[in-house]
Image (cartoon, rainbow, N blue to C red):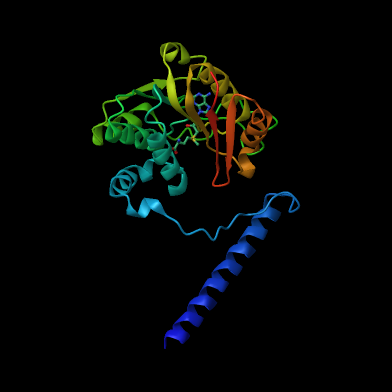
Length: 255
Ligand SMILES: C[S@@+](CC[C@H](N)C(=O)[O-])C[C@H]1O[C@@H](n2cnc3c(N)ncnc32)[C@H](O)[C@@H]1O
């Protein structure tokens, strides 16, 4: 009985991976990707710490309809903010859309008792500064949001430690946070130029030991972010973690 169940499970698992691999190959063809350089990553890793963290699960359930970011990356943001709890400074997110990851970070900061302000920035009119590197974007994507959508989420979750800035960052809104130090910056802007401008702005304001998390790292539609990370990762003032879940992380090692 047990042996039969095990066999059925193995057959089911094999079929699942075959299907996933087939879908992956189709994706490569559809997106005109080079199989010598790109593959769809299917991991056998099983460790899933978010399943056991009641505080995370409850927060994630409340924000999941307001985010485009999957649970793995949400968990990583949650965990990383805990990792930098001894680093001084506020938290910056550029690319807030409907507020999901921003509210997650604010909720985590509150739970940790950081006393940090969470600064959330978005145009609320969609992606800007697209260029030749950003093949999946033309500008204006993700405009299906508005400032009150984020404000309502923050109100519903009782998050008061947050400031929301509307406009292009850093040109329109950077000035009102220019005197701050940050411990974590989440860059989720989809386009090379925007991401580079945010990185250049935040780096001198990032405390040593602080982290910059690049969303969009490793996706075909946001190849400009991978380009930016590759250009910067050999700097001597940081350690780069190429996390193949869609994040790259810079840890600032020198002031
Ligand atoms: C993928 S969405 C962000 C997703 C969000 N973090 C979530 O939880 O789902 C990207 C957002 O970046 C914003 N954006 C892109 N470049 C920007 C810039 N330079 N300044 C402000 N917002 C920007 C867009 O308006 C868009 O809402």
